[in-house]
Length: 629
Figure (cartoon, helix red, strand yellow):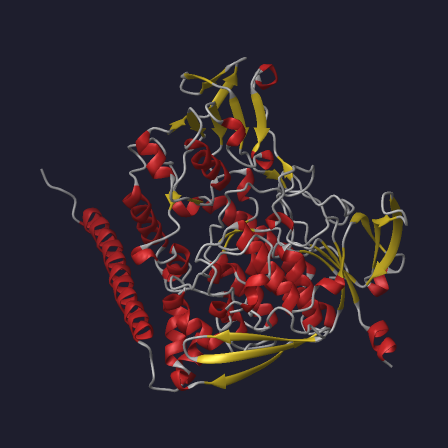
């Protein structure tokens, strides 16, 4: 009987086992689908699995990388990171978080490693079944353990989720004279650490996150670092007032209801608190919200010390120097091109899906609108002002429910109209650039997709049932857990996590001894047994088909009991601290902070409206009453 049940489940091919692929597997399991993940590497993690080697067409990161979004904003919505993790995770922490996620939800048995997908094509009966033929090459080890054979296989699937990301193929711009340069030229994709560049003069082309991170990494050992860019950039710090993560204050529903100009002015003011952008020649002509922000805390220190200097765009390159648009010349030993990536999905036929100059015409950045059956989706091919992991999860939840018939797409014409409207809005708002072809605001996009699933939080309803939760959802950070409050896939621990998150994010509990990267020995450590998100099993305990995962929050202890191959069962056990009327001092402080922020924003919003009205009134008066000589 069990075999028949498995055979009757829809089989979903998931290409890639990075952050998008992992959550795609989990969402398919939640909806009773049968995922088969095809991963060309030997482990999970994708972009976040650091390797000292550079592999073509494979995502790569540098050793000093720290994620730009705080841990509670980048988490999967029903799996908080451990409290012993810092507010901003290193790449080792992110990778370990993925390991915890995969272990808890039993994702690894559904992954085929060393499997390279060759191409995805429509099946012969696609118009009636919506199925796809996936051809892949699997690496098989021979009996002597030394020889590797390539086994080419073609299988049929009911649906396909492409989770390959968009940081694999470097974009190399044409620069006059670059081929004559006698020094070292490399793309940021190939940068690993600063050791090969000790004592050298380095020019970095670009002013995005990678360019600035690498410049700060090199500034401590290189002779001189030059940052070259066409437009400059707004440098936004990771932390804001009182050391709180800036993204937890900025990604708020209240903040994004403020007038656009007022919000842009506020962010510019915050950016200029650290360093005056005009003084150091990095102030762009556009506003903060017209471009993907560059997030960095170290650059102001290196700019004021002169270790990093800014320059105009590169005009041309000589054998041992670089000339810029302002005709200044700098001697140079190394040129690093932090110029972004080519967005490509080569495994799919161009008639199905095509990326043209980094532009893709996909409904909600997911679905090719012309397909008669919505059984193929691109997951994670979106550039948000905010964390990408929760977006991939939300997209995967939507696709999984479409595959079960619980959700549907609008008509083809409605999807095309939405794509056209989105392209027009992006053209008006964002600076024209290769990196802004997939741009979106985090809350706006998450709400749009959540509405299709039925998990968008209804704040008016919450205001009647739970005023404190409603206020924290509106005034506080828009945490991914908000999309687990109601609807399918709801999580009973979401409420307590949301109301306590801001007061807990900076009060992490580091271990007495830091574990090695990739190690799991710390999971039974005394200081980690009752922290958010860490399995309570100790070394040596049995690991059967069931696992327990305890979430200790300020108001409740939530136990999630997951069973392999089935959605997690969720139960809540209140504690004395979580009873109504019993609030910790940190919670009251946080609540008061929310009220103050709301009052300030309301006053600012009112002043903005009054100023606009006054300006309009003066214009009318000038027209009605012309000046008399």
